[in-house]
Length: 253
Ligand code: PGA
Image (cartoon, rainbow, N blue to C red; front, side):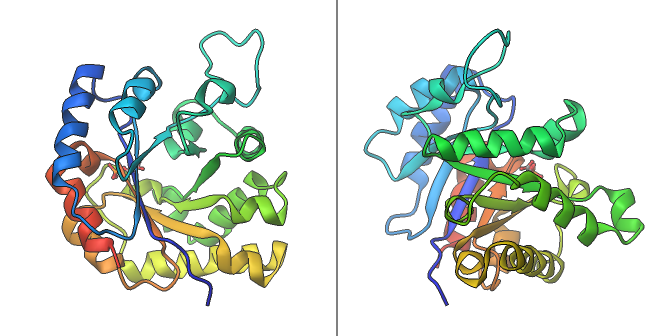
């Protein structure tokens, strides 16, 4: 089986001012366990990306963005271009359920965002996940796979290899209700299966799949051995340096 580097991504969402995030980064740098093999990424707000990337220079922690515009430049008031992020971030989250559900981002938009990110040599973290209603209606697999297929529509096999897929069941986000390892692992298996049917076995063995939704230091442990889960996308707990460091430590291999 292909070696896939583990990854833990902290999504700070619309939290922390620049001074607050500087303090968190300084604490995180001290708290981060030495000799970890996983990649560790934090995703601050756009305003904070520059100072975070300065603060994290020469550290083992990378910087990501929470979103990006689907167009490169032009009359799009309030949007942030991939060109502005280039050089400062390595990863860009696209299609987070908060973007899809609160800001009405469709699969079509998410597909354009994923495409623009890879074309500029950064890595999109493509988020997919079912709502509670969809889960209750036993539609989780159908919803997740159709979101993924539509969201990576413009990507070639080589580009999907450079992309990450985050399975984030909406009912588990910010609710304290973490999805069981068995359920998340099963969905990650379906996701890998879809990538295999679309792009072939080699690509499917390379793509990294993350779980996200109420991850904490203790739940991170349960995902450590998952065959198909290569990373964690962490919201709330990533705002606390000790908890985030515990997640990294407990998930690291
Ligand atoms: P949470 O958020 O860890 O606070 O549930 C996860 C996410 O939205 O990525």
